[in-house]
Length: 228
Image (cartoon, rainbow, N blue to C red; front, side):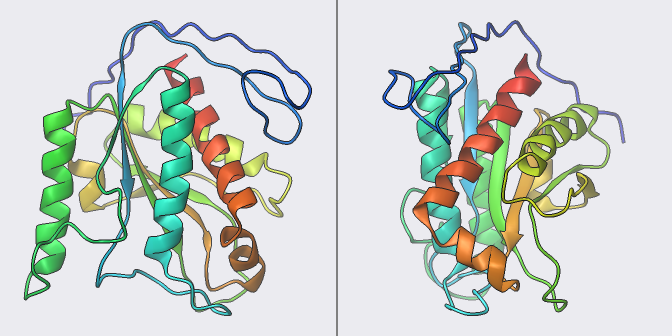
C-alpha cells in the first residue's frame, strides 16, 4: 500500500501559562492557547452508541459508549475554542445504524465513514476505551494505520501528551493497528483508547468529568502539536 499523503500547512501557535480565571481557560492551573488561520476540519468520532455499548466498567458497569461521548464533547470544545471546524460523527447516546437489525455494526461504521468523507476531514480522532483480561493493564494507547506516516506522527504526538498526564503510571507507545476507522480518509487518523475499563483505577478516573476534560485536553494538545 502507498503511504498516506499528509495535509500540512502553517499553524500559528501562541503559548501562555497563566493563573486560574484567565481568558483562555484552565487545565490544572495553566493553559496553552492555540490559534490557527486556515480553517482546518477535525472529525471527532465517539465510538459505539445505542445498542452497541462497547465494553463495560469492571466496578460501575459504566458503558464505554457514554464515556466516549463525554470525552468527545470536551475535545470538540477545545478545538472549537481554538478556531477549528469540528464535525462529530455522533452527538447523542444513540448509534448511527438505523434499525438494530442484522448487520447494524457495519451500517454504523459505514455511516461514520460517510460523515468523514463528506466533511473533507483534515484529521480524524476516534475516541474509545480499552478492556483486557489482565486487570493490571492500564493507561491510554493511541493506534494509527500502519501504512500512514502522518497517522504515526499524529499518534506519537498524542501518546506523548497522554504519557505526560500526572495520572499516568506507565508510559505506553503508540501502536499500528488494522482498524476500519483508520482507513476512512487519507488524512491523519487515530484511535485513542483512553484507558482500561477492566482496571478499577482507570475506571475510577474515566467516569469523572474532571479526568474526561483532562484527557480531552491532552489529546487536543497532541493534535495541535502535530499541525505545528
